[in-house]
Length: 244
Image (cartoon, rainbow, N blue to C red; front, side):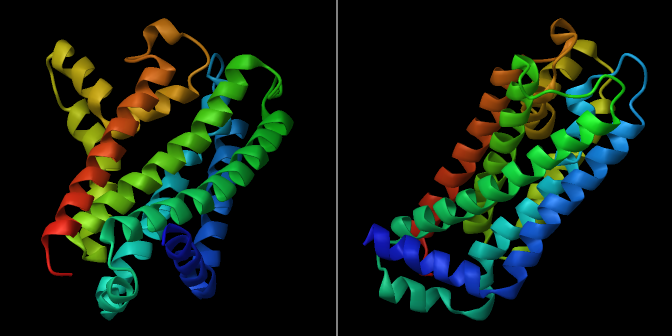
């Protein structure tokens, strides 16, 4: 049943024209912004954060792709057909999450490798993936995008509507840091930075001045993983309780 579900979701994904364009968008936007940031990196800046800056833009396309994979069937009414063919709804959600994660890993890996190559060419001292911190930033960037995809799948399963789900995810990613920056109390500011999915998750890209970061690289990615897990659990619970 699980294999059938994954095969069905993969067939849907690869036969929808928009999927290929969205995956291309993830790569193109990530590399483009990374190249611009690498070429304009200030003195004393973090080379890895500059090279992989495009992840902050590519994640929006990842979110749109993931939400569309779940919410698209609700919009067309095809979700009832899917649940008729595969009555175990949690298996359907798991299959969607697996397919979206696989596509994101593929696109994210291509984007990060291309960004690293651009960074090596544009940064004053180059960028070598052989260096441990740089490799961690690159690997972490791919994992970050994958967790954003899973977070988006969970939110889409929870709210169903594509526009609403996309708004919720993008709000969590981009509005939370803005709200955090308005907090005057330094202690609360630091706490909110550690809890914000984007601020915490992107800590994995830091390779210099780690003691000045609000949270350590892998702990920050762990915070994002908790956000993704929470969204998936909420989406799964809602999926089981409602009619369709």
